[in-house]
Length: 187
Image: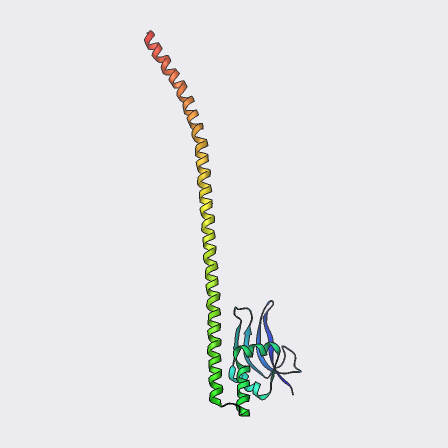
């Protein structure tokens, strides 16, 4: 029986998540499987890969063949390197301690890269947010200036009209006072 380590799809339309399963090569993709060893979520950035490393390593050493996608994920997690080192130990090329040191150094380096990428993504998101706020502030300031200019124009347009209206209102009143003062003189 050929055993594969592969993905089984689940999740809703266009938001797929996958289970990493051990299955018979003849079984359908989402059908019967022997064991579920983890999950894979490509919707996050970076993609979330949660695999039981011990179980996956056991199946790899027992001869299970990973599909191309799962092989890339296992390589990303360091299990393919661990398998390679373990085969070297079995053949006598190096000792178990040397293999463990090499693997631990690789894991530490990989974790640093992952943390750096996460920090870089968070910083880029924060910078984009700052830029967006600054752009909004510029637009808001421009709108405020345009509103102030429009209000000043309206006041300037209303002010001469009011002055003319007050001049016209004062003119009859002045004529009326002149007439009354002439009448008083005549009396």
